Length: 485
Image (cartoon, rainbow, N blue to C red; front, side, top):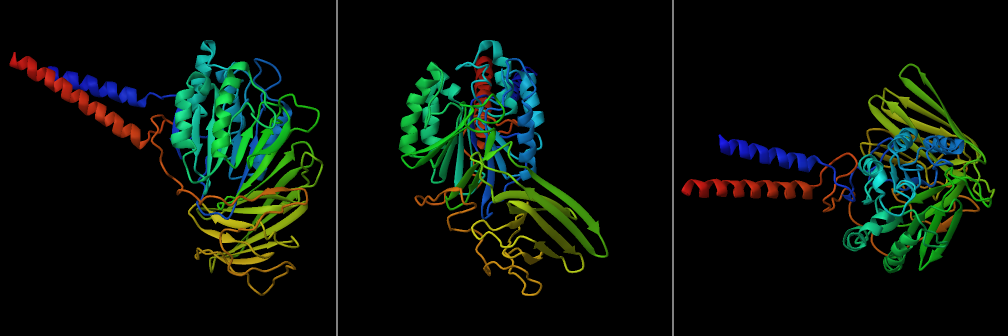
């Protein structure tokens, strides 16, 4: 009976320890993230993302955001990108009620991945003891200090909380070198206090920046996303694009309007970006549905009058619109022309056929629209009138009848485009060519931490199993020796 009690206590202790969240470092491709959680298919031709930062309220202790933050949130939900990246200072003091309001405010934004800034840590470079409860809540319910995402094929997005580097630089440096930056994928890294083209941070975090900069120069990520300065800036260093975006709602600089960033990633390493003004122009999507005899008709009207921070029209703004047929959700990703775009989708139940018709004069050949399901089916849209047989999982060819387009036709297109983008006359485009596409989506890292949902990695399970077996052997040995005596 005594042995049973001892073993029971040991097993319960192990279970409690294994279920207790550990802060700091998370593994690859975990479920870290907030907002509306959605799967990201592995072979889309291109992936639209949005980036923003510094939406914290004006004053200490406040929970509610500036009205422009809620407006940015609504535009993000309308554009409905694949994912959204936040570069810090999303609350003022890092208190639990503020974090909860942030989570609730952005619950309808898809796949929101964020990194902490100084305001999440009570506006201090280190983890303040008086705010330990808020820090733990952030780490548990929003994101760990260090993690990366392999969700976008060909890309790894690395998130660095510089406050962790202040606490334990050696561990952070080792994680960067051996795990985060140790990949054949193209790299994007996001952290709060910027290092280039402008640099601003507390004295303590400047020390972390001094150690981080040589690693950035060595590994040369394609893009570095930063915040902290409530303005916009960009520049290149050793081939790396550095962006500062701090226009999410906190008191801003006079030079540029409140803003967020459109970022398009291709699996082959090419990318396109544009800073979008939050206050100039609108983006709306209206939807009507009509059910007739064996025909379901969806009508969408996209109104795009958005401008960039320089006052230029955004001629192609990717909008993801969704509709349901039976139990299946279909997502149409369409680069909306400046002005109005009308899209009519008809589903013919008798032959499982879908038609997509748009009044757009020509399809963008650089970023072609595409239709996909979460189950892995993808169709590239080549013409203003396209017929799709839903049972066939291949990009469709355009039917000759009823075709109204005046643009170029590309039959049997490849799923991935390889040409450099020119989505508008003022767009900034960069093509990178070095390095292979990288590892497959879903690779699991060897981290010993949990993600924000408490999911365990394979490493954790093996590690805890070894500990459990070792303790059982020790206890059995002690009992055996006592019996001998």
